[in-house]
Image (cartoon, rainbow, N blue to C red):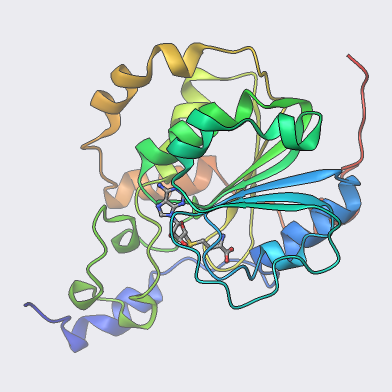
Length: 255
Ligand SMILES: C[S@@+](CC[C@H](N)C(=O)[O-])C[C@H]1O[C@@H](n2cnc3c(N)ncnc32)[C@H](O)[C@@H]1O
């Protein structure tokens, strides 16, 4: 097994991007409050640290829950599904549980772009135009953590060797390319950013119809130092505090 070279660590750390002070968990909790969200769907729950902070009706999906936080908290309704998101969307519809469309969804399951793309396609169908979908881990601070297989021992920047975003960043590029009507707002939350997607269209079939084409085209794509810089320029993050305090997140337009 190859080991990281300690002499490369300082340079690797110096080139690491930094994000803001707000954590993605606090951001989501505040977003739910500010938006007056009636319900929340979280794909990929793990120990429940984020789900625990949501106060509205919620659904959590994970094939392997390792709960350490009380996921119920102040919620009146909570449904947990111990299964993959593909199985969940095949057999269940969150609209049946919520008796309406999903208000806010946080997609944080398997960190491979084809999984996140499917989660996005399946979730958008259950949303309405006023809903928000949050994509986790799409602002990777360095290129190494975008590897498709997490190999911490081979990283040069050992301080963040346990951070693994996988290649879910590709979904942001896919949405920008194929769904220009979506409103995409990168947010500078720690540790690896969040992408807020709004102006959703539950009737859109673009991604579904081109699914295999997209997979073939993006599967082997990898960041180069130049394309990484371009990605960060295109997806320059907004400060979480600005978004929470200056954007009207309770916006409601009746269809
Ligand atoms: C990064 S963790 C989620 C962290 C959690 N959202 C939080 O904020 O604390 C990713 C989770 O995705 C789950 N996962 C893996 N494959 C999945 C799949 N196919 N569908 C849904 N969840 C999956 C893992 O079991 C793991 O618990």
